Amino acid sequence: MTDYLREVMLQPQALRSSLANLDFSPLERFAWALKQGVIDRIVVTGMGGSLNSLYPAWLELAAAGLPAYWVDAAELLHSAPAMIGPTTLLFIVSQSGRSAEIVALLEQLKGEDESSSKPLAALLVVTNELDSPLAQSVGWMESIHPGSGIVLPMGVEPELGPSTRSYLASLAINQLAARMLAMYTPTGEPNLGRHLQVLETTIAGMEIYLAKIPQHVQQVGDILGDPQHLVFLGRGASLASALSGALALQEVVKFPAFALQTAEFRHGPLEVAGPELGAVLFAGSETTRKLSWKLFNELKQIGVRALWIQAGEPDSHADALKESIHYLPAASGIGLPLAEFLPCEMIAMHLSRLHGVEPGSFRHIGKVTDRL
View 1 (cartoon, rainbow, N blue to C red):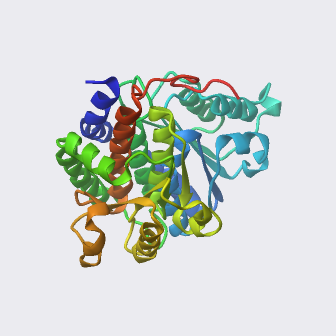
View 2: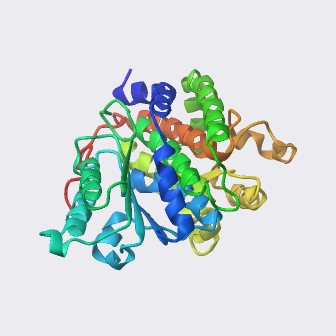
């Protein structure tokens, strides 16, 4: 068994452990500050998989009517530092807490001395390393404004290769944090009980799914074959799955995969569609599923090796193309982007076997990106 496969199989257990040890109640003071206007914007940031894991949380904040911005830490550091001001809640996610852009952003905020530091209203951190510069920055915030810094630890055992358990933990924690921040909005909820139950149902489904890894790897392999290029397409929260699916292929298999919002694929990239292209489409939520299914049909007619990923029971409209559909256990709401990441890992294992690549071994980078 490879290290990558072992870490994939440990994902449900790691998620349960992570969620069992978290306390989101301190976030209520940030939610109240948002309601009172003391905080007038939320900037959510990270790099790589950490940034991807923030996308569903950003959507939740935006849907609640909160002034939230999703921007990668490199752009925030070099091109948009003015987004951070004395009324900003900065929401940073980094598995290691040591990524080059994160460390540089923190140094920029702190300045050379107290007179040159850049004030902000609040700092929310999600990280797996409590001794990292990112986690330690909460203490800096607390020294300026008591109660203005919160760290939510992932609590995941260190990974040897690309993110698996830590990515799913980030997805869950970020979405729960977003719902806490939105608790005083018209659509907000006073507690997280319902969402935690949805996550437990999702985790139970993940355990069932991962008990049949060889069958899943075989099925996605039969559908996708050996494409020259692979595109992942998703809408809404499923865009996070598309982005991280492509990233997983790049890191785990060294395969030239890319990701787009599904509607964007029509605006130019559709011209590259043909038998040499593989496409993975996430059904996503009911709101836009029919639109995505329409594109899936078109891609199949063009000759693209297209794979449709859907949670739950088969739909009647799917009968004609059922041989190209990969079903997940029932998952919805906050749990859907977590469940959707599992087939990406199956695709990675299929292509690594096909191309003779040891899954998850690094060639040009390491676990932590330490250069700007």
